[in-house]
Image (tube, rainbow, N blue to C red; front, top):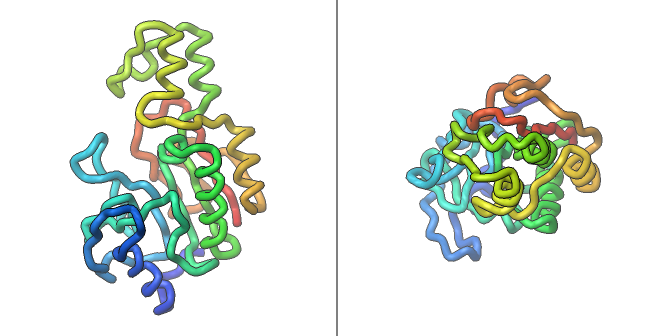
Length: 218
């Protein structure tokens, strides 16, 4: 169940998103009007960079920089400044593959910590199996619509795992195991844009190229 923010503790903790987080970034003052629900959108993107920001209305959108109105600043390689069991949903799209395996483990464990009982984390990320399948099929045109057209299948496999700051690309078995090791009770795969939980439906913004989308219940 998604509840409105009701505690001053939660608001005070989110206020620290705008303090010094050790990353050297300068954040803007907290604006409580941006905090509508207990839903966190991690690595929402930065306006003007890459694919741009993916701002979800009704969510607390977090990235390394924030404008103080639609986005909140925090370095997601360090623990979130939130109390235990203080949020109901966490969503991340195409972010965890940019972390090392160890950093990804720390993030998943911290997300489990801040989720209330019955809360859900949804993770959308490139699927190593889909990448390997295209390599084996010799299909270098799957991602033409994204502006990525590798010259050879070998290039496709190497670039898919290393370009754009990718550090660790998961398959379903590995990411499921990491979520369970982080303390989540159950993990299941979802179709792109679909969920049994209404707030988690139709969140994906990138074109579906066989992405790995998992939901984990706290």
